Image 1 (cartoon, one colour):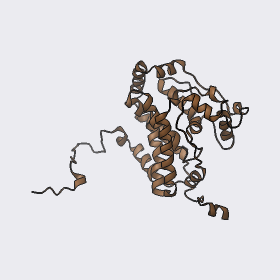
Image 2: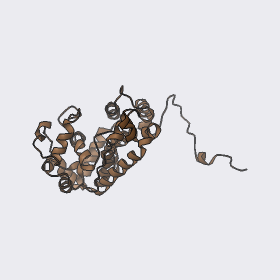
Image 3: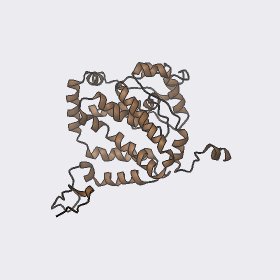
Image 4: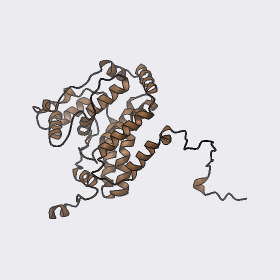
Length: 285
């Protein structure tokens, strides 16, 4: 007797359960808050009522309820035994203490000068999460990730706009696994990046296809930097602040970076498609 099961459904094995609620082998699928959050950030259109940064604030709260913090600490400790660079990074425990005004004297075109120009031209804060003394290896990793994120935009070639965010996201998604031996630890550290980047990929395809090529290019550029570069996420950036950008990249082992201006495309995405992309339409405004 011929098998009439559609090709794409072959191999599906229904699993019985006595549970009266959704149950899965995935802790992510089991979490109702995460399912609701994920549906929202994938399917919604952009609007001023919920800015994209607020989405990630909510996600971090959800993630903290799902994480096995003891397991993450054990993975870090095991990784340090076989990864001298990571071990030395933790041993030094360097934490940046600069303020925005500390960059005022850096020359235009230097890493510090570019950072100062960016931070003073918009509504930015250096510390995007409330300060607290690191009490674990994961705390320290997260603190340093927050302190270096804006510089990763500059060094990796991602503009300070919503399309430019894809560059540092995909730098991390490729660079962290490249420099850690344990793929499970790398995946744990990149959970924020993979969920965060989904907002810009799925929503762009569904609602803003006009800038889809820009999104793809930003992903490719971020991946290229991550795959070619040293472990930028473990670097002390302060010695590179006075250097011209090209020299700063060389000093920090950043390779393959290419800056592309995505400000118009980012504004189009953020405005729910209301900001015109066509230069002729812009001139007519």
